[in-house]
Image 1 (cartoon, rainbow, N blue to C red):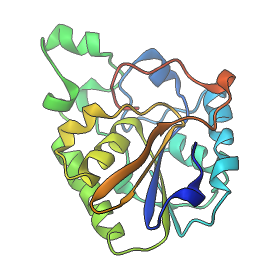
Image 2 (image 1 turned 135 degrees about the vertical axis):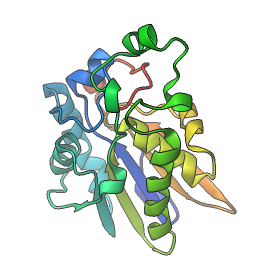
Image 3 (image 1 turned 90 degrees about the horizontal axis):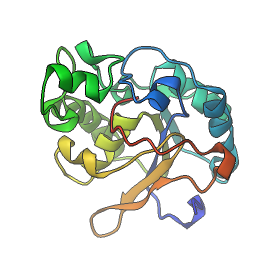
Image 4 (image 1 turned 180 degrees about the vertical axis):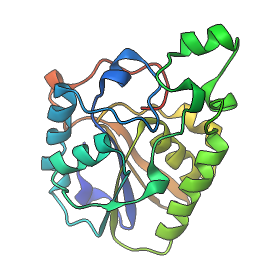
Length: 211
């Protein structure tokens, strides 16, 4: 259960935006604008109740519309726009499925190989590192509205892991994670959707692609 009062500060809460048609279809969706589906809007609105339980010291948000809309429906109409938490640049693979990419590039793996003409997990990790470096000296509670792949890279880099190790962390639409410190960097909660009514949960996104 995402009871933010239980987490020792400082902590970071990372949220993936609500469902989009591209995510539902398993298509790569990086920098291309893609609106939330009706389900995605309902999912985003379901975030409002748990997130209103505390006062957030800072709220950061990707510049893309699907994330800004998620933040707005969750109760944060004027977050700080931070380009470094934007989704991967998918380059030549934008709007393709994994099967379509592998038909041209056999054996392709998103986390290992990245996107032709776009980003890799290492380059995304470098920009996420800038965000984490900024937050390292901050106190209180930080809320970050981001994306499927970038959110996963963020947790990997927070733990000191290479960006490609983000493959170990599933991240479903409108789900959240909480990162903080004990004796070392720790994951307090990850891929939590307990705030979502059963009717508002997307089918599990097994594609492991950016959205």
